[in-house]
Image (tube, rainbow, N blue to C red):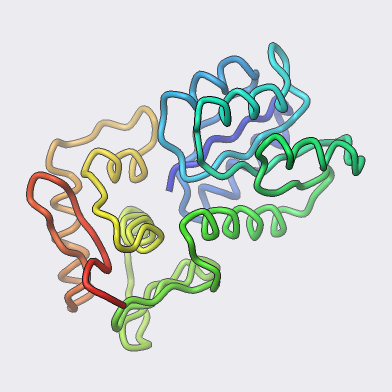
Length: 221
């Protein structure tokens, strides 16, 4: 999945990016509010991690502009000024969760997983469809309880489809959540990846809707 990190602290940005990449996310990074506002208004993200203390435009203003423009991706707010009034203001502006600095990396990761899961309508930490179970905490996919060895892109693909169960996801949208911002993409990369994933899983899970995209769970649990 593709996440936008908006943070101007070099050390925090580096550490958070390394954490997210190690846990299967694609990370775009911006350091000032105006660029972040533009990026969030034009790109598709599974979630945004947003610092409030930004140059050019503060994070709260960025968040308010996104919500006024009906950008609905979940937003996890970070701030060194962890007063209760600021937390209330951030949540009222449209934040989905709030994490004061300094924070533990494991907590940030857990909160990020939770806001992504809730935004897709999932309450449980694991997701199951038929004989396939996705465990985002362990980054593991199993069939009938047996873990499957997947590449990072294969895991991102099934994770995105499972999070959006029941919705036909266009190829272009999938491609944006499988590749980095500046990675070259083959025109048939998603189709090839889906075929490989189907063979590895060995069960009927991903349906193709010709001309529209791919879906998990179109016909029940």
